[in-house]
Length: 307
Image (cartoon, rainbow, N blue to C red; front, top):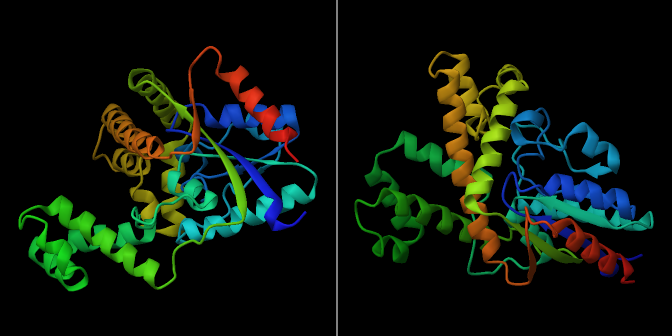
């Protein structure tokens, strides 16, 4: 089957909304295979802290693009489109279909070709670069940098507004990357998107449960092992890892590290929900609703029936 015939069903939503469970169960029932679309689960050695599917979930069906990159490597949406397209092509060639599952909206929209041109988003590498520069230089230097790359943007931002200055830098540099042809081009994959929506209170409770499990299941040891192997890579500033290392160094009590991780994860989930609300052509289901599994099975059955 050629690239023009590639299709995938995407299940996305905020962290702790049940994506991995639903995707693995659907894949098992319909003979499909799962393709990861989580920007942190791409990295190897980060299974606990990024919430990989459990052994039981992984055993239900083949899973792809988990742990394929080194934490020292820069991975972005362009690489994801390349790798996901190749995985979906191979799955299709085996006579099966793909379920793309993850919480990185940028990856899913890049694959689907639905990333609006007026919503340029900085890559992880670019955001880390801006963050590092912000730590090393005073605010005036950052504004001077923004004035050099986007004079119109700096004129719209108040002189003392550090947050908007940093966001303006990210957007301006992302636009430069796009103009240089470094951003992902749409893949030839027809992606049907399902968004799992979750009430904030219920999601917060699930996040707290997950974070406690992470710390009890070896997150601190995982963070220390990554640091020994790769040094101070940006991945170790991510949610959970920074707190785990702070606890290991005696800078935080365990309960403080857990609480801080819960707070950062909850804030991240809110940003995910904001992103997914902007996806126009998506079917939306209550992640924790009584009829969600039945609805997902129906959508999967209809998707599989299309030739």
